[in-house]
Image 1: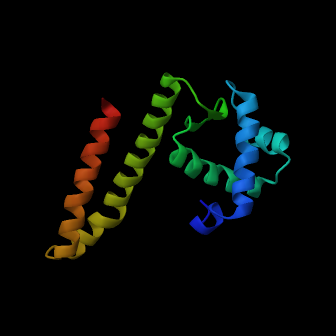
Image 2 (image 1 turned 90 degrees about the vertical axis):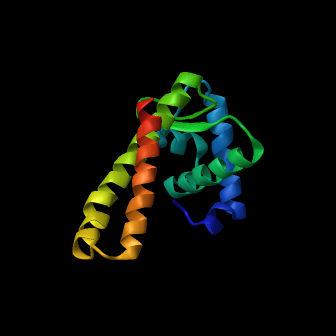
Length: 139
């Protein structure tokens, strides 16, 4: 993901506007990344920068959501079912990432330093996050 300074630059904002216009014209269908690149006339890096800036702009203005699916690509203002499926997919991905971090990094640290106050605190917090994500994904 581009740094915040690049997402907020004038160029990124112009790219975001171009990407938003192209996606708005394609609605309700989505565009795969190569299609979005061709339709916008921007380079792949400019499209990525525009997408990052667009997500921030959408959040600030309360505009319809931007999602990505393997089948349809990037979509603006998807239906409720598509939004829920996207959110579940992202949360499942984050849950897997947390579990791998716990088992691959934090657990070996805890085994090597069983009395470490820091690692005990980290394990407690990460277990809480893991439990919450698991409940959300499984509901």
